[in-house]
Image (cartoon, rainbow, N blue to C red):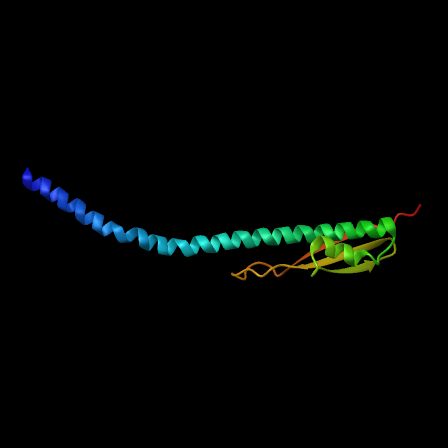
Length: 128
């Protein structure tokens, strides 16, 4: 009985020593994966926000053109909504005007997300 008790104690000690480095190895492998995933999620969130702002800027600019019939203010309006680096282009047709916006996105460390987002809105001229 004494022998089996000592044997069990010896087995427990050797298992405890063998497991002490396992946690460190798992952490060393898992940490970069978790960090890359967190960076991807943050970058994707930023890209979605820039895309929404870019589309909103195009919508507001198209509405402003129809309501005030003044296209001179459009660039300033787009930049105030989508940021100072946003660009805007107008395309007039017989009964409508198309506003296209381009907004840069901060580059992500992994390089998998788009560098630019775009927005587009069409407004129809209303004749009274």
